[in-house]
Image 1: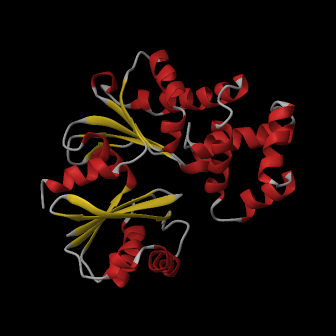
Image 2: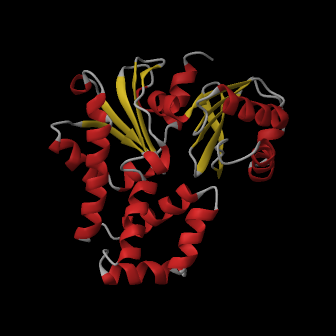
Length: 280
């Protein structure tokens, strides 16, 4: 038996796999080593995972996570996981998880479009090229945090529709000053901004919402997808809540660039189970 975990900055999906069949699954908060210390990661794992994940020593833990892209951050995650599970661990980036989840052992151009955004070309086993995301301050075009940032800025400047602005602050029971404080004073501002995008998802019929979402997607295609040599010839896939929630708008933008999306999924786990089943 082995464990697979796929973690964004917002949530982590866990599955126990026995003879290549998922026998248990659970969800915890996102475990990003850029935002959480080793102690905080261990605390979340122990408190939020069901007891069955700790009842025995598994053969291996395969962890795919946001923020797991450097040796230093991977070591933080590895030490936290080993301390809790006493089991050998493999740490990989969430981007490799997305690629394997979307295309398993086939080539493709894999994109994450969730709280953040990222992309890579994939040869059926490993990442061959990555245009850097830049994170929610310098990049993450089209993501939930990006869309939320644009909308919040428009609200503060009086550029968003008046009724939509009123409905947002009423539903979230928060003042503009409180939101500003949360964005600038907490380490998880990207999550705050992504939650705003969930509100917008419920208002997709609004022309203003459609336009800021499509503008974000266009920026992602222009600044990221078009930078890959031979992008036109590769299957194009997206994984993440933002891609799933706004799938129709995402497809429309892809068509503007004469591209067709082969797969949109909210989860990488099914493909990751299939990928690892060929080795276990």
